[in-house]
Length: 66
Image (cartoon, rainbow, N blue to C red):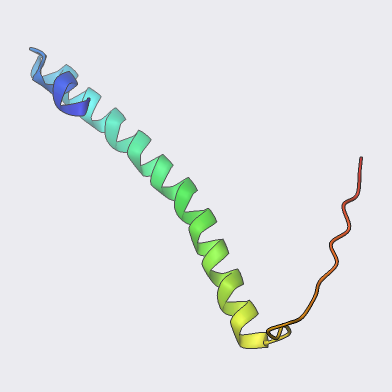
């Protein structure tokens, strides 16, 4: 899709503005998705290092209805 947009006949100034907008959007998407990824990775490492759970443990989950 980016290649199709960039293939249109743009002026140099508008092409520069368009590419900077695309870069900003891609950076925002990567920043927001990496925060979730890093959080989940750190939670997994923490669960592995603490070793609170052993194979065969049963956990009861309570759901609170709002």
